[in-house]
Length: 334
Ligand code: P6P
Image 1 (cartoon, protein in one colour):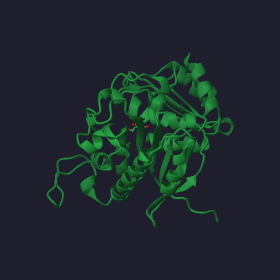
Image 2: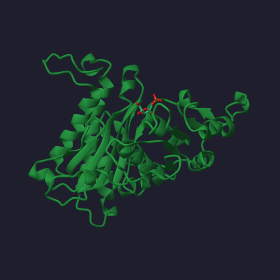
Image 3: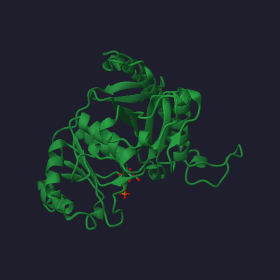
Image 4: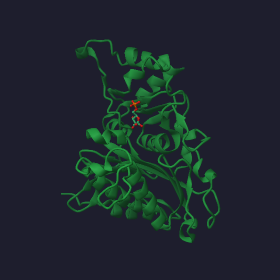
């Protein structure tokens, strides 16, 4: 029976990967795991607590303004970042503008975090897995000052860490600091994330394509040809080597493809001409993980991690998955 390794122990052990590490990034990653446990508690009981489902407007038993679950998740992460002192500012899907922290403690923080606190939250009402996605950068602005928009608009290749939490049949935290990808499963009996998927590698080949086929006639025709020709969708099932699997929750689809191999595509469409997914806090962090695990991620034409961001909530077309499937799909996009 191998020794149980908690996320905290793993982070401390790996701190030596950073020659000048003084522990801030380790503490930040631990803070993220704590906020994830807080969110997990609410997500796992959402069905029982009608006051955290659906939209705002009602008040709960304490007379508090009802908040949507994703706003509750957003606040959980923001509060822990403010308390920790490692983060000088954040950007999140739930906030129109970026948020520089103003305390003296936070202004001395070395990092900024961009995150989607609860991606796919519309699925919570039907008990489908949802996720948190986070991306960590070293600040560009001077220590001791307030964070600036330039701290947030950095290309994905500058990330120092990225990861996601999947609130599913079990709750997992998967992250990279640029030295491979490792997955941790929450053991509710001890309240700890424990190493369950060391050194994760995305299979080079896969048999699964994840795309909303309702969009297939309103996106680049190359995608339709890729699905129908290469994935041989038109063949009888017995002969068809590929299967469509689309959960409609990015983190869940991505996580399955990371483990089993596959490709996820959310292209630009006539209804989403810039794409639907957000570059900074959805596409970049998952692209970092995919590439660290041997996969690839593009906007259909260029690596996601090299895109120079223009705005906080910028959307892009998104292709991410197994190396060979990505190369085949990209050949249809030329
Ligand atoms: P559609 C959820 O809203 C999300 O951002 C991703 O998690 C998911 O993959 C995608 O959008 C689903 O979008 O248009 O297929 O419903």
